[in-house]
Length: 288
Image (cartoon, rainbow, N blue to C red; front, side):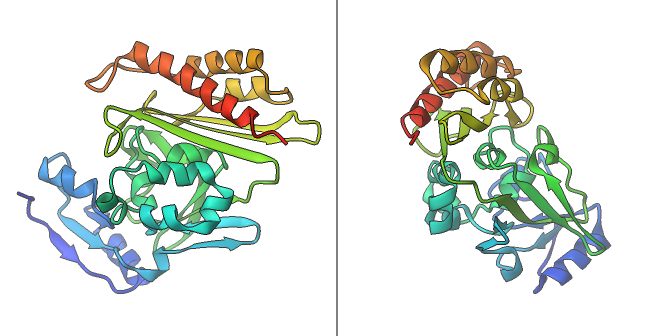
């Protein structure tokens, strides 16, 4: 049974922002509710006020704007999975959406909620970090943009303030000769929390050397992280078996794994290296 709470039903984004400001810090936005309602039933989170932002048109949609892709914070995972702009320019994000829980959850869960929840096992942060994405945080008084890497602070801890909504996620369209990949290991094929997830991106120059490299890792630290040292090692190099092996080892060293019911720290470390190696080998086959 859910704890008692007041449910507020704004009809516009400005009304929702006003309610969050008036009831802060006791009010919590409710979109898909796929994490929040579960936490409320388990008494892990017992807000006294919910502000329902589900269905607000201002928070939905995927568009191209001034060389960027902009995804509204209320856009569902199912919408991301079906969108041709995502498929053509952000394949790793589409793949993360494809293995996101199950169809019922994908129809409810939103990209904003997935990011704000701050889980190190979340599906969407790793591919978004490949593109240096930033989040748009809107309050009644202001709008601020924060790099996603800075927004994610720790386990269920982000930079969102109580009176703010995550209204959009934005990133630059990648240049040509860019390839991305994502893979998640879970205890079941679907509807599973990630034991380890890895996303990689390589943009090549005219000489087929790695001009831009991004490696993002989930479920191996208190937040989703970038393996910066591994990225630097590969930048400017040709993708070959030897450098891939070294980069995979360096990426695993960036982790701070813990053991839990889903897997041991040692397993996560080894799996991180194996997945980075597999995905970079996959991308090496796409060099043109």
